[in-house]
Structure formats: C-alpha cells, structure tokens
Length: 175
Image 1 (cartoon, rainbow, N blue to C red):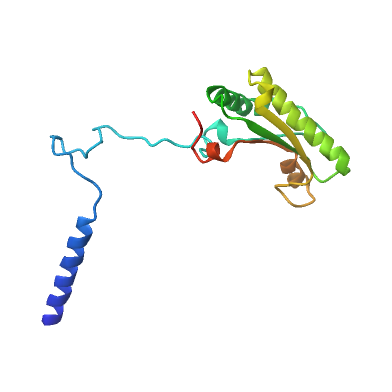
Image 2: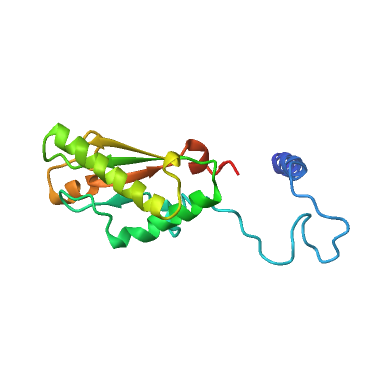
C-alpha cells in the first residue's frame, strides 16, 4: 500500500510543478472567459508569403523552353506578384540567377543563362521596378537543381531564379 501512496504523492507533486510553468494568463477583467490578448473570434498568424505554397511569391523560378530566353505567359503571374512585392518594399534588392541545362558549351550556356536572367529583369522593369534594384547574373550549367541526363532533369535546370536577401526569406524584411 505504501508504494501506491508514494506514486500518488509523486504524481501530484509533478502535476503541481507543471501547472506552475504555464505561460497562459487569464485576463481578470474578461467576463467571457477569453484569454488575455485574445478576441472571441479566431486569430490568424502571419504566414511568410515566400514559404506559403499557395502564394505566387513562393514561386521563384521561371522556366524556359530549350534554347530559349522568352518568359512564357504561364510564369507572368509569379513575376507580377514579385513586382508588386518589390514595389511595396522599395529598400529590397534582388538577384536573378540564370541557369541552363548541361547541353551546349560552357560559354554558350553562360550567355544563355545571362539572357534568361535579363529577360526576367526586363519584365520586372516593365512592371515598374528600377533596374538598379535588380542584379542579373548567369550560372550557366554550373548550378543544376536536377541531376541526370533526361528531358525532365534538363527542363528543371532551364530556369531563372529570383533570389531575395536572407532577411526577406526568413520573414524579416525591411519595411
């Protein structure tokens, strides 16, 4: 019997200690039982738009057809969303990194990657973003995201990536 009393006493002591660690405080003036700082309605948390897959800002790659640097219509909603965000955050600059698949010579791919990054930059400029806020660079075939020697892998590597400073992608953008 004494063993079960020890377990019961220890359990009660642990429960008392843990209840004292609660960081939720009740608002004494609240008459409806809500917690301090809450409203009766539901609360929403701010979601980082760059991490939300339902937000066009999370789409930061523009893909290209073989041997092309034309921005296709299907990627314009994402480019337009980035232009709106950049217009609302005038202190943020971006880098556009042009990439190619592994086919073709090194110099050719560097030039094609540059044309791809410049094409996205030009679209952003047409949407009102000043050229000095956009750096266009080329990695050619040097930074693939997909490895392999198939059309599927090559298609994933024919892209221009819109890259923001670390503060932006972590949700700490300068206002």
